[in-house]
Length: 240
Image (tube, rainbow, N blue to C red):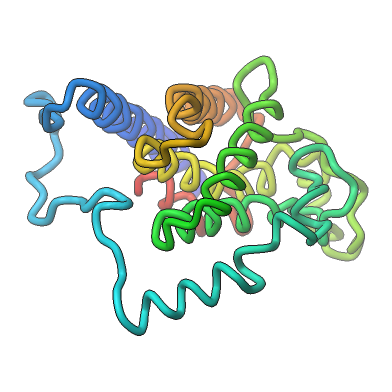
């Protein structure tokens, strides 16, 4: 119902602030070597299960073999040959497979996870390069990726929702969820990737996540961005 929209917006903004608080605690604790402290002011209930940081558990046996095959196969090489990823519209390229610009974001998130699990030097190098490309895509307000939404290849898709053609409503949030997830995972694991530029990019990646979340909160408050269409089904990922 329309009356619930302001309440949902306030709740989401609170969740965004909570996410930023958790990221700050994680970065500060990894710098100091101390375990992250819980905020006594947080209204959330105590967690029953603790999060296992990415890279702290490594596969063996059959699963390790499957990941090795994935590393050498398609999943580990998308950033070497697949044009919708290499030249994605998300990074102002021209080869995205759809106007959602979701190609680079999905591939980026999976690349970080596969690099962490496989510990492949090649994938850690590609991960650092992808993060660097993302950082170069930031707008003045911290918004990651292109704000433009090209004239849709599927014009009939917008016949019932022409306001979304601006790219500032559903799609602008949809594609950024996996980007934020990938950057957050990168911050967790990059310190372990010695010999690459990844450790030096951790602070910049954290700052990019923070700036993107703050920019999103501002756009939601101003009505420039909205939780509509597919994005309405994805926004809970921001909490994670």
